[in-house]
Image: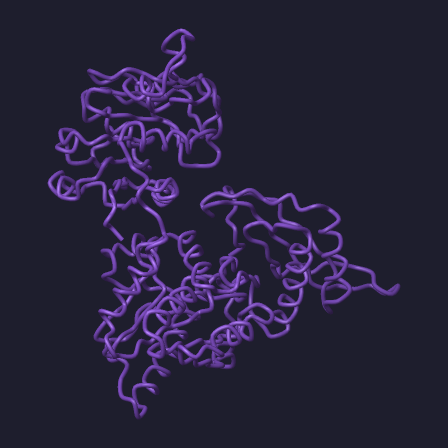
Length: 533
């Protein structure tokens, strides 16, 4: 997936590196994420149309602060530094970065030097803007609210740079050296909290880097299908199917490429939501192009997790037991009359590759459904056809492959499932209560139009006094959670209408035995996380 012109996102530890790369792809430019210390020679070989330096947690004047190869600034490739990336550029090119007297965290108003501002209100053509320092902010409002997240600031500009934006506490909120095509912004244009931030990145790509909008998903299916056919030949392929978006799209893509050669193993660990195992079996079990094997492992998972209350232990136990079940099923399949399965596939996507530290398509990331596969399974090939795609791109592929909308738009769901949406010990009673409450909540939310990005119920572990039928009760408390986000790195709680919450609460208390109270979580991320555990 690297036949198009590319932009490099060089990572210096910033939490938004994936969001930057996704934003670039959403603007029809192919992007790749590389470590911040990649050599200038390697960058030259890749021949990107531009480079974006990410933010990072360090102060650039510290001895252990990461820096890029200084040769990158001499390649003639346009560079945009964001937050730490801007500081690093300043520091390495002779400017000064210092700790500010006042920190700026959150949304603040910023004054931008747009094309209009630089010509005292005179008319300015688009081509003139592209030829000048206004290129980065061309067409933007002169005052926008931006997301700041810093304590340091650019105190002294490097030679050849001019300041192009400011806030009340930051006199150099952006700078540029148009001769060398070097640009920096103190704020984060990649996040939704920055007004017109996407336009800033668009201007960098098209006004400065000369992008040609040549990245589209339309040809990804055929290109990856051809790769699968070439690597698989006549061999069977084994896929661990979790029922999530990634593995489901992977299954659909492989079965399209090599009909009849795919074997999918779905392990039901007993922590799925209501009716999900049946939906997965209905979707994949009726396909003529793949061999679908469903394994009911609920008893063994419940036994393994019995008495465990710590969420991290739950995750580890569920993850390891999944591997054991998958291993047993793979061996059973290998012992069959058709001989061993030589190719193992998984729904690894690009963020998995980045987080695992592996090279593109080269490693298997240890996660709940396939991580840590034992060597004695003796797979000769590992196939990861989605390893260059982000989640939103995978969803788009799923739609093109004809998967059901409910499956393609399936909410993010933790690998350990409901076991970590139950605070404390997991029991069958708690699982039954949570499944029913969660199902009711999802039903009511989905009745009222377009739902938020994620919404679910949590078994809090708390008990509360209630009154039912003139009798005192002391039953469980269910929390409802719904968030709105585009990236799940930050989110706001969803302002679901009170009448919807009232219906959900009333139904849960009346229809789910053992629940006496329902509460709604209105905490954003940060400071909270999406999940409770």
